[in-house]
Image (cartoon, rainbow, N blue to C red; front, side, top):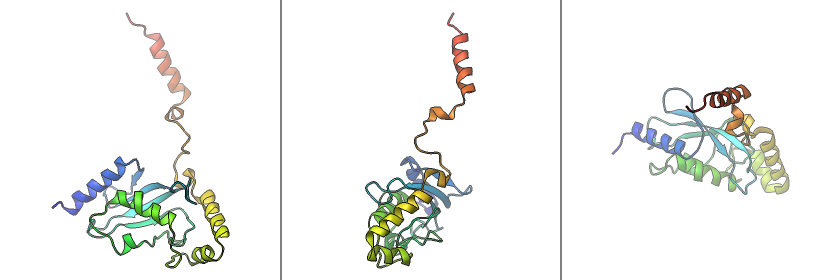
Length: 183
């Protein structure tokens, strides 16, 4: 059986290999941020959130601590702290789950199927049950206001890698190619 620290390393590498942007908080592998995109065909589509993940010493036997850093309007996410109310993370966690499950299954399911009967954000839950169109509008407003790539410190997605080079870098590389013909 592998040790918790090996499993932590393996799960973190698997998450990074799944094309998630992961930013370590310090040299250890216990605390990091992950950029999470709202699921397609949901009210949260197009939104990007920075998720703070803290792995306990006993991970994977004990669940990770998950929280939204930038604001999200959702019945099961505390608006101030970003804490998440999700049974599979808080109560029914199993060592069979890994970090990829959290970002590819658990969080998308949470956003697709909010549970207003077990809220951390009572206002969002009440609005969702009382006036669904107003709730949906407020979710979209929060996405517009707080969940753009620049809100998590990421460049807008439409930037290509070519745009990151300055014109001086282009010019010097072009001159070097043109100025040195083959003998």
